[in-house]
Image (cartoon, rainbow, N blue to C red; front, side, top):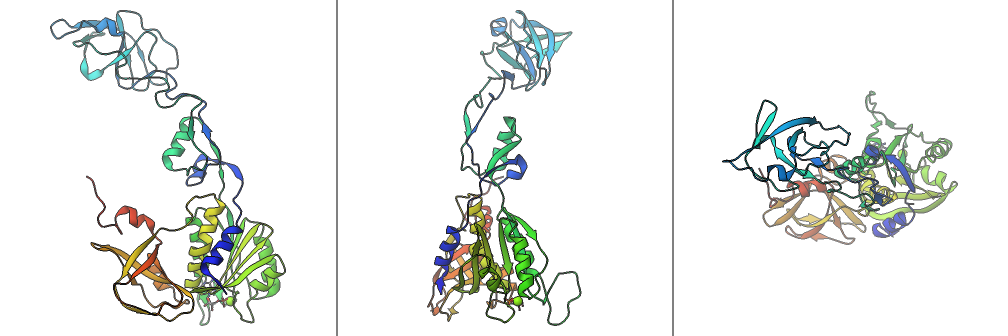
Length: 417
Ligand code: AMP
Ligand code: MG
């Protein structure tokens, strides 16, 4: 049986990075640029006013003082959005709005608050330097400048920058569409009455949510009945998408058909991994498309989504960071473990004055779901670990990294306001 680390290496070696595609700006949030973006225009596009006020020629007000103020006639008004190239004659001023184009000849703007205005004239009591309250053409960026480099992740301000230069689409590694298949005659959809021996399809929600959180697009397909024919037929349909994730049907049971179906359709790379939970896990490729045959037990499904599916999907989207942050946490409690496999324990990590602490969130059986739901971390426990005393340092994979940043896990972060 291969180790979890080896399994992840095989998975990552077999997932293709999706080719560059044009994507509308807002659909590209969080995706990775595949082009160097060069601005076709300067920003601002022309000299423009930084204030509501009056544009002047600096020499006209050079002599203005409190004792000897200068009075100028307001010759015209330039509003934001006026595109005409106006000329400010000598000896007069014009009213101008924030963002409006500076007329030729004017070389400074006086703030509204700094003049008195009466009967179509303003009174200026102070000289001002050339360039005051003017945003020069190209101050922010010059035409021909590279504003974003390939490999950059698209955040909200970077999308705003692309819009500022007039782009509507951008070249990125697009989001993979991932087909989701739940197998099992006992599985029914939430919302229907549950008979003894049946189970709600929670795995489909886990799979869809994990895929969505990774930035990919989940595509739900019908529940696969326990028959080889139906399994083959639905897998074939699922393979029209970029990747496939299935739950259940990968153990040794008489009605476990995922492995058998995949063996006849493509290459099965492994079927078992030395980990707990999640030992039965079939990873296959059909052509270049990866298929993740996760086990049916809910915690095993979710640990598989976390350890393999999430990094693989991020890899397909060209993300430089595929893996979760890991921290050292001290056990709050003693643990007695017995396993010949690497364990991924569902736990809650908190920040205390001395560092991070960890405590299990409940019984760890792979068929249980609550401990995983209450966890914010997986403790990575090497094969062969026996008894761990309280206070022992363990590796914790943080599942809610925003908690680290927002202070929930980092009690010594600063606040403002
Ligand atoms: P299997 O790997 O197909 O033998 O499934 C193992 C166990 O996982 C089943 O007995 C169910 O209790 C559970 N299970 C399978 N599929 C699902 C599902 N879609 N949602 C929730 N639990 C499931
Ligand atoms: Mg089954």
